[in-house]
Length: 409
Image (cartoon, rainbow, N blue to C red):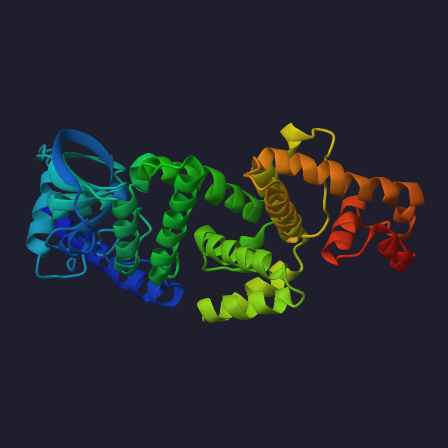
């Protein structure tokens, strides 16, 4: 009677596997167990260790070492050739015979059965939620999750290599920098290396890689990702990741900042971004960003921060409070200061400290222009601009103050 009951249980589980397979054809659900050997082949090994006997959730068992074709993702039997083993396990359960723990590998958050596939199948068939297992934990750079397919694992191969090369996984274990375009990890690595170069230049010493990496993640990557999330940009691009958007937005922002220095800037930035990313969604990103006022504001804030850092004018002339309203213009103002610095040195026939040149420019060139603009009340004609915008316009056009005011009025 026990054999007959166990046999009927097997047939019921086998039929469920059949109908589950039919359903997943239509729904696209994940239905195959992950093959352990192939997963291990795709991901770089960082180490392994025995962690002993544990009680593990059965729903997180997603693969098998050698039996991944004999069961589906729910561990329902898909082959009749192994029915005798399944039935014997089921009969032992009816007889209240205690079975030994299974053996499994743990990778990330999931488990692969090394020994005990039929025990797992019978346990799931009776809706058991936990099972005892002797665990060997495998360390890899990425976290596998219960919803991953083998194609997802293969796509993660480049991400794993990126994490291993940079060490980001150890510095920020909860960070997720995956790209939907694996070929772009090289560009992401280029962003980090470029930041390290500027980071070292500012400190006049080659910065340790992990220090520059933290600076990039904390001061460049995460703030931009926060803005992308704040403005819900990702919703317009299903199938892409936050790091995809980070690459597109950061590079468009950089191109736009450079091109704002010229009259035809925005169109050139668009053309260059489309040349870099030959994907359909790049045009959609650009359409979204052209309407994003927050992007110009971010560029403006970054430009001002760079200008203040380069000139130290807040410390030299705290009353200055220079505020421009157009992206790309702080670079123009910096060029005027640098030219003044050069001619001041020529006039004195000596090296002039940069701080002194900044003070001289502000006191003898910039401040007199501002005072004249204020005296004439010119700003009432330009409600959307600042007096600093007008001062820079005069400097850019090489006009005397009187000529500039006459032209403006």
